[in-house]
Image 1 (cartoon, helix red, strand yellow):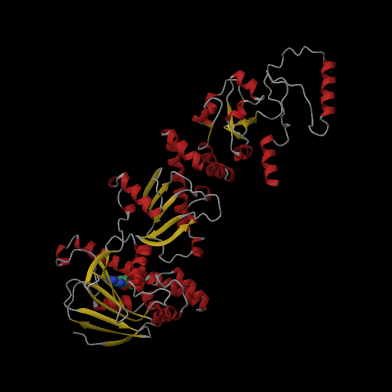
Image 2 (spheres, protein in one colour):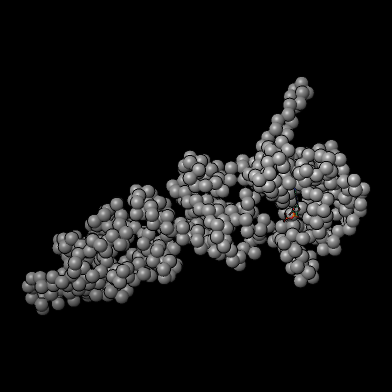
Length: 562
Ligand code: ADP
């Protein structure tokens, strides 16, 4: 067997190590996620190889990751029964920085001349995997054995430029890493006390909850008589639902998952689950809730999706993945291409993220369209909660995307009432000689249906859209037309309804006189007094000028000025 040998770290490796150790990088807790991710990868590898080589497992086929704490000696242990490493592999993988992520890290580091601040940034951006152990430990001991090897390997370092490596007596397949914890991570005074089982449990739940192998730890409880009972807990819930095939998932599973993961006591209104294997590879599991949270329009609303990389939590509330107007969508995206240490800064111009974001938006809109067409009841439920956001989206976008959003809008109308209609449906019902889309703004149905302006339209059987939401008219003004047909407010100027040849038999002079008298009386309150042809049973009505603001817009502006 090979005797103990002392070797030096590659210069670059040592640089990274020094940074780790001396850095004031605040997110030290991620060391656990990094080590668990490595363990999980190692199990993936042996599992994969065993598919074609069953004997490889030598009976040890319950894949597990074990954590343990030795409170007396301040040692934290993580153990896996994965693929392990041979002597050469340890030197290659652990003593040198050969991994692509780390190499990129170093490259950038060198370019930046190792300015302390930049370095911290870089640690955040690139996972440096195994080395993150040195953020919380002053000595790391790794023992490992690859399948069918006769000996195991022990590697040890205090991170001070050298490490020792030796062959030791045969152990089981897999890797065990022992961290001798730094004082800062021990005891009640510590910001994170890594000798506490609860701390570890919380960290696993936060960062590694969906790792697909059980992460186990023993818990001990003293009863009154001083007897100690031992309980083995699995800390992660596993079940990364999104990696399974859609066909294998029951509706209840989706619902349960949503309610647990996103803390909602109601079931989701809709589930959108996609797995994409292309240039960009990702799985997305999105939910449309039944109810809008009360703070959805406020600044403190945490919008955005959860990011995972191969079941490892990367970050929450990543708002770059969906446009603002889809902020009601909850869910997660898992892509092996996300770096575990993706920072919000890097996200800004991540190309892949942009591609994913675009396809997610398309998929959500497509699904909404499908619900609109196939299940109007459900769509109306959706609309009453989130319609405003879709409208605001339509108001802020242009071109094709705007068209798509406009297709998703529904309104009550004089024909459809609470059933609501799309613009397309309205246009299909238009009378042959009708060349505008009529709408009326107002408080509610009662209010608009009693407006004198509505009388003639009702009599002529012309359908009028009801705009009860203040944003409606903004959106319409912005659009100007739908399907080349203009919108026309029933409350504005002349309606040009061509039965003008009514019996306006009254003496023209008399009429002029009357109008002038009224105008004099209302001096400064109205801009014009006209003879109207659109009233049936009411004597007068107020309208906005053709060019000026409509009455509801005036109201909105008034409100804003207050
Ligand atoms: P990365 O995980 O990004 O490759 P690391 O520094 O974390 O970088 O690990 C370097 C390499 O060491 C891994 O790619 C793997 O080959 C090996 N390794 C690390 N941890 C384990 C483990 N628990 N079991 C087997 N191999 C491991």
